[in-house]
Amino acid sequence: MNGTAPETDRAWTVGTAPGIFPFIGHGIALFRRPLAFLNSLPDHGDLVELRLGPLRAWMACHPELVHHLLMDTRTFDKGGPLYDRLRPLMGNGLVTCRHDGYRRQRRLLQPDFRASRVAEHTALMSREARSTAQGWRAGAQVDVSAEMLALTTRVISHVLFSDSLDRATAAEVRDCLSIIVRGLFVRTAVPVDALFRAPTPANRRYRRAVERVHAIVDAVVAERRRNRRTDPHRGEGEDLNDLLGILLAATRPDPGTPTAAISDQEVHDQLVTFLLTGAESNALCLTSAFDLLARHPQAERRLHDEVDAVLGGRLPGPEDLPRLTYTRCVVTETLRHRPPGWLFMRLTTKDTVLAGRRLPAGTTVLYSPYLLQHDPASFPDPDRFLPDRWLPDQAAAVPQRAMIPFSAGGRKCIGDRFAVAEATVALATIAGRWRLRHRPGHTEQLRPAATLGPRSLVMTCEPRAQAPSGAASPARSFTERATAARHGQDSRTAGGSGVDDA
Image (cartoon, rainbow, N blue to C red; front, side):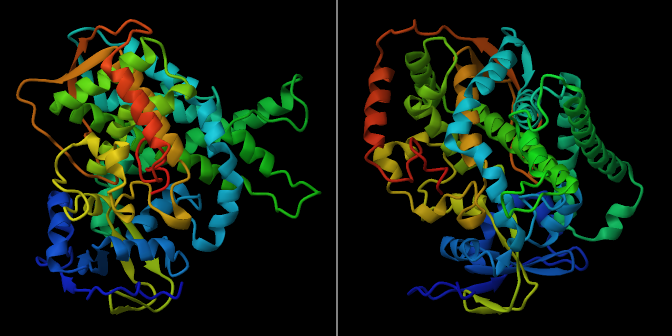
């Protein structure tokens, strides 16, 4: 890649977003009405100038421009106010590291996120989802946002640490995450350090939450090292089969390979990174799915029919994932409609040209999956929740570069398969037992922070009767037809690996 925007027949347009305020730039609009502000930007150009506080930045509004910057990771590296705020939290982990260190980290961590390894975690996912559902009662008011965050925190903490986090500590991590993601967004929208050094209650809560997450991770690592030294049943070279075990093994150099050992700080940074990203985003996807299903009863009925036909009341296993076609369509459409990761940044490493505009080294460039995935040119009627978009016979029509809930290119999310599998398993498990209903007078409240989704969604539980195991139903024949058709489609289909390979 040469750092120049793609050669196309399109005449790129460049503009400036209106409403710049002194000192805070577009911070008020981005903080108070972020989604409306994003949706207004394409009216001003394919590449639009905006201000984050005093910082001049550019928003890429066209999928071709976004694809270009995601493919050219040398020129458009991780950086800007978002990553300036993330690095004190996540250190130099996989999400925040620069281009030159990424390949080494990815190679180390990739084995724990391969398809076969994700399949091994299916039992854990379904077991924790069943535990969540068993705690509910008919007619009860359930804080779905908190329950889903508790569920995904338990799952990711087990993947990272096995059983080293008890439920009380996992709940504490969940509470810290809620504080952190709110604080990150305002620090990104108005990147003025002086505002966040003041000893306000909100700033103190944010600092305490960050410190507590670091302390919890350090305590788990220290305990694992102690147990490894004192456990007579574990040999000197053996580690538990979790991500912490993989990382600790990598701190001990292998004389037979040229790969250098990683440091204790790298272990810490990777664990914090996966703990934060693996809980919050997946929880918001699930919460949004239940919210949207309650608003769209026809889609909900089709989901329930498929879950009853495929599972018949039992927990899903890895062999069921290809058969839960419509369930996965619901997950994919949720990720399109409300991508948890909705706003990202890159920093130019050298002088370059994008959309005909020369950008000097050190320029902040933004892109938004939410904006691209609500473009009517790519998704007709984009504000409607339509899982049918992702059925095998329709998904092929979706422009491949328009759907990027997990980013794309060399820095595509390593946990994409894990996230989709977890959402599919948890949704099927809970929907097999419960129907969630909005309370009377409920109004949608989406308050974007560092991530996007409902943060205080309370719903009413209604038990539902399941189809008997093995019973024939229209849903079963639909699932079988869709699964068979899926094998003949390309990678954009949601029933296949469309989200994984966006």
